[in-house]
Image (tube, rainbow, N blue to C red):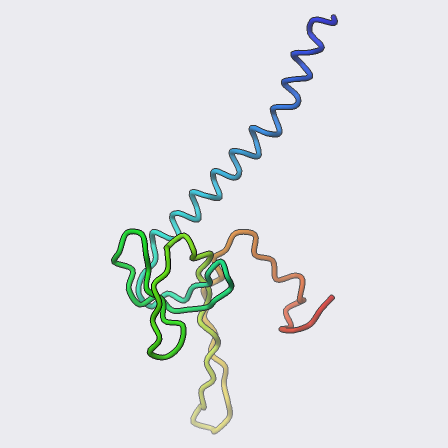
Length: 125
């Protein structure tokens, strides 16, 4: 009985480590796919929180991001954390009232949770 206890204890300790490693590997592969699929015109968020538009993604290791009108910077692809929706644009309809246009695409991110703000920008729970 005592001879089986130690191997069983070791097995029980390594199962969670093995399962968490698989999850982390899957997340890393998803992030690499996202970074490899960047195209000009995509709006992205970097790991430092900078929101920018992809201008040139033809290089293997880097991507050119436009952070303001006419200001283009070069970033390592690994610095891109997620693709985000473009900001809703306000347009004026023929009746003269302001209409907000929204995109139907969703934010692509790992672990993105908007439930903290209850949908209202700047609100805190």
